[in-house]
Amino acid sequence: MKAVLVCAALAAVSLAGCTGLHADVHTATPASALPGERTYSFASMPTQGEGSAHAQFETAVRDELAKQGFAETAGRSAHYLLSVGYETRPAKIGVGRSDCTADDCGRPDGAPFALFGARLYRHTLTLRFFERENGREVYKVSAASTDRDADPLRAAPALATSALARFPFGAPADWRVKLRMNEARGVPDVVSVKPLDR
Image 1 (tube, rainbow, N blue to C red):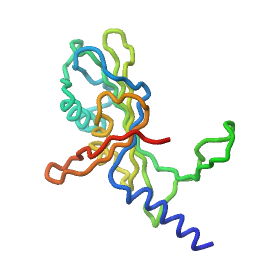
Image 2 (cartoon, rainbow, N blue to C red; image 1 turned 180 degrees about the vertical axis):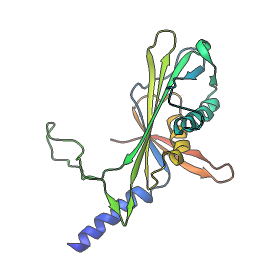
Image 3 (cartoon, rainbow, N blue to C red; image 1 turned 135 degrees about the horizontal axis):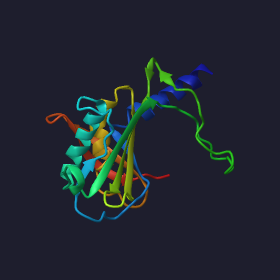
């Protein structure tokens, strides 16, 4: 019994720590192109000051959007209004089942799992593009990664790079973005972008 538990723990470590730097990207509204001028402004809340974590996420997103030919403009001259949402929470590990029926399938709601004192955390960044003129959402993309660092700001550059590795992501809805840290610049570079098998 102990051997089985040790093997299961090592398998979980391998899944979380040895697969390299990557993020899974999901597009709720896959698109082949976005209409209109590539200008945007951030949709900000009054509580989001310049020194806040949110501002640092916006900086990471701003840098990646510039690579895609987007320019940030103030006020009503921007074509898109961009909403930036993020969260970090303890990751949950469960066992999937292939013999379930449609009524009882789903991810188990197990307790957060810590291996050898190192808790896993899941970081998520969600970007939503709205046409400023009519408020219609035209694109939504989320990037998620798992590591052992509870600080969401350390995950921000990789999440922003992954979410905007292609702009926009088309069908299918789910992708795996593999990254490599560029030590000279201190930022992640995209190694590959591939559809994620489900």
